[in-house]
Length: 128
Image 1 (tube, rainbow, N blue to C red):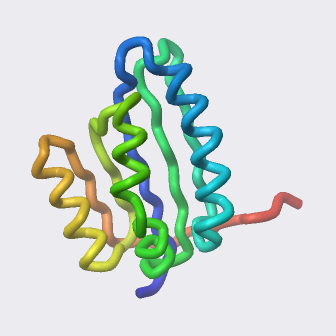
Image 2 (image 1 turned 90 degrees about the horizontal axis):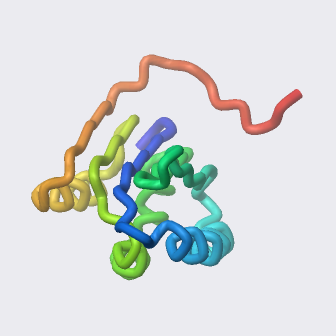
C-alpha cells in the first residue's frame, strides 16, 4: 500500500500518574526506536495541565504501520497503567488488519477519526 501514514493517539493521564508515564515512555521509546526501524516518527507531547498525552507516529507506508503494531498489545497494557485512550486519528490508508484493530479499540468507547485520502504534500526529513 502506498503513501505515508500519520497516526495520532490522544490519551488521558490517570490522576497522579504523569511522572510514572514519563519514566515509562522514556524507556519504552528507546526500545521502539531500536526494534521498529520503519517507524519514522514517534513523539509524545503533554498538555499544559498534565492531563493529556498525545503521541504522534509517522510511517512511510502501511507495511511499516503493520510492523509497528506487532507487540502493541503488550506495550499498551503497560502504558494503560498510566494513561487511557481517548481518541485516535489516522491519516492515510493502513492495512485492513490495522484498521480492524483500530475499530476494535473504537468499540471500547474510543473515538476514531479516519482520513484515508492523501491530497498531496511533502515530508522533509532533513532541514536545510
